[in-house]
Image (tube, rainbow, N blue to C red; front, side):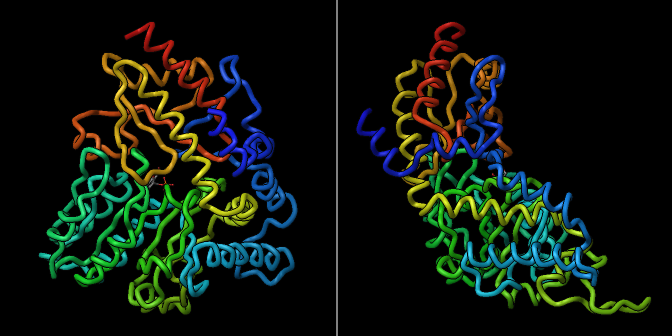
Length: 416
Ligand code: PLP
């Protein structure tokens, strides 16, 4: 235990990091808040909160079209975030970085714009049983529209994808493989580099849903060689309502726009419209300027923490500690024990419903997620309808994990 504490302290001073997050200093239901729902959304540091109000208080203006000073300042701040994101994910060019409202919109954009252009009757799309509904439903919709088949890579009892089965699912008709980088329900880190290589050999393009990866793992789209990468600001200490779609330039250029409107055009007549160049072709309408600007501050915060491998190492230490203690609780079963995981632990307790556990933990000031976590097919493959999920971030501490497990023990002893 003391070794573990030293290990953690050598990586990060979580107590110091916590001070930057005003929401964490409060009591909930009379108890110090323990926030273990970071996979749903992370909390926001003060610099991100300030950036939003600074924009509205000091330079609120619409971007790109205005020639006045406020518009220029707002445009510069918005485009500055694009540069920051390009560097953050190691994209070749800023034109390959498209702002969306989140991972969900990024995936819908690809399913719709890539699908309309390249998916034909009899073609195949491959996803996996591990996917969030955001990476299932858009593909079901386009497959139904185009008469294509949707196939899913099975997951084994540990929560790993069956790569052998993946190879067998691929065919010359496979147009796209859409897989999460990290599973939100189980925390599994998928072997995405390998998956991308295999898919490319079969001639398919690959979209990675990076919603759960971007806060914990270095994203290098060039090294991964993925064709598309989607993620959300709010899971990365940034605001809600902003996300990114990275796409390789040639693919993005070959796709027609996803939505029509202002900003995405070169010329409009009543007969015909010509479209703007990348990235604006995919950014119709007034975007979420304030939150894109604040997203830059979120990245600044992440960078200030140092190497991502240290962040993940710290969160893994919390996970290992929690896993060891949870396993001692009678009737508790952990769902998903892949070797490569982020700090997410999902579990069920025999004789107790996950919703009841979640509510009783909330009464003790502990926020966890309960239910199917928008992964109903995954829950079905495990023969359950939901789990309790605790997901850790860099501001969580060993003490919080101990309190959580002790509280859970009390609940199980009293009600099971
Ligand atoms: N993909 C995964 C793996 C997720 O965990 C989530 C959100 O929980 C999403 C997609 C959807 O993200 P958003 O709601 O930010 O669009």
